[in-house]
Image 1 (cartoon, rainbow, N blue to C red):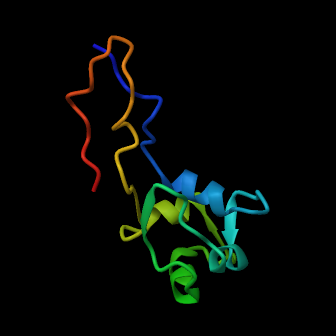
Image 2: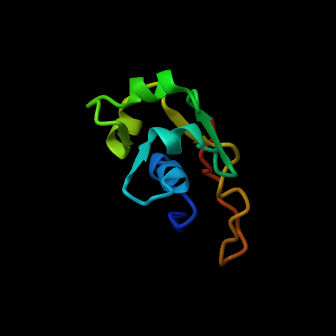
Length: 103
C-alpha cells in the first residue's frame, strides 16, 4: 500500500511560525505578530494582529511567542483550507481512497 507522507504536514504551527518569523529567531515578537499573515492554503483560528491575543499566547511573558506557546493554546488552531494531497498523483495512476478530511 502506498502512503502519502510527502504532501502532508501533521503540525502546521511550524509552517505558520516560519512564514511570519522575519528575523528567524524561532519566535514571534510583538512586531512580527502585529504584521502576521496567513500563508496561502491555511486557515487560522487566532485573533491575528491583536495585542491581547499576543499576551495570552506569551505564557512565559518574555515578549515573544515560541512554537511551544503557539501550539499550547487549544484555540490556536491552524488548518489546511483545502486538502493538500487532493491532487497528489500516484505512480500507478490510482487515487488515494483514504484521504483525510480538512476541517
